[in-house]
Length: 328
Image (cartoon, rainbow, N blue to C red; front, side, top):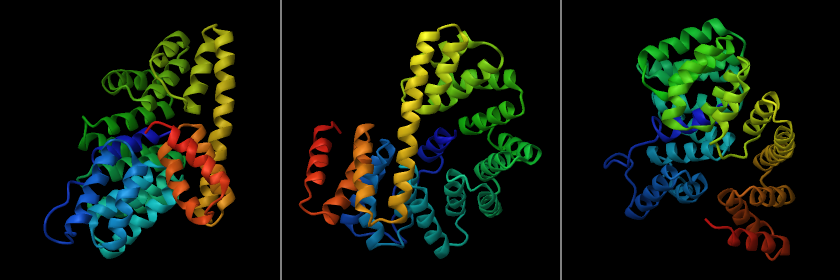
């Protein structure tokens, strides 16, 4: 339940600056591609960023900023395996690069590989002791591993380093929630949600309210969140049912089950295609499902591969027509 933590982090503290003149500076046409990738990434369009950045890194693997941004675009697109590979390649060339070391850990964290993530964040923290994020995510990884004492030490240290950082504040609220301090989590989350309107933070706020028996307040907190995420649908269903709105609650629960099934199938297909890129049948189904949920960018990447794998296949043509009909 920390996808939004990733989005905040990727869009803010970890987004690389514009390319700098000097070491590894690319030719003008590659620089133009890189800048287009930066613009797509900042606009929340990771698949477009991947299309721009892939050729840049292929031709100039020593272009650090482009490789960092390519890896982060993979992360934002939910492609952790590919992201980790990009960051590890960069770290192999620059073993003292604290940002690359952190992002290796972050890719592991996003993959729920908590033990490996802790080790990676140890390295990142040693390289960048003034940065709160290695400590923060090491703490969150330790929390997942069932070590709340170590998690508290790390998160509280990160909080002292960056008391006004929204990501750090949200992680502190997660720790409070995990420890059963639901009112403290609510008090921390209320101003955060009011400031950001972030769905992930709003879900945790609603859960904290539900734990305190405040179902009506949880319904109200979720009222303005427009999302088809399964975790949001589930929490909203629980809030509606507990507040006595049984018919609406049952409808939301049915929507949750449908969405959860789609998300699980997407994860399975994405893992299959990532492991075996030549599996065209899995890629066909994945592209179709991505179109079903309105993910035009993700479907477009797979359709590009399918046109190479299955030239002239009518199924690819049909999916391409659907893709073209979706508004960018």
